[in-house]
Amino acid sequence: MNNQQKETIAWYLKWASSVCLVLGMSFRASGVPELAFFDLVFSTVGVFGWLIVAVIWKDRALIILNAVGLSILISGLLKSLIGG
Image 1 (spheres, rainbow, N blue to C red):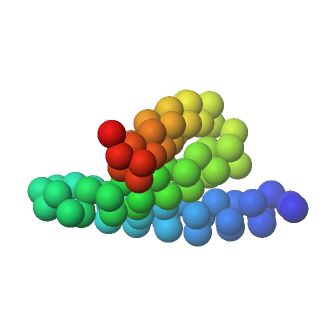
Image 2: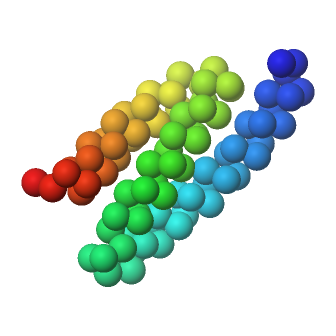
């Protein structure tokens, strides 16, 4: 895969991931407890997408930020699914 293809993928992925993050934040800001699960799902997908973009860009700060965020969100998602 050449650099142009990687940048095209990164462009679409960063926008799709940003939309997911905005949706997740919107669910969170609504304060409706029943939407908390959707917040976790959309936020997890968004952060995972940004992690992939960060790897494509080789941006260590974004890789660390999104890897830590992803681990936090996954633990919250698992807690929500399993209970506890």
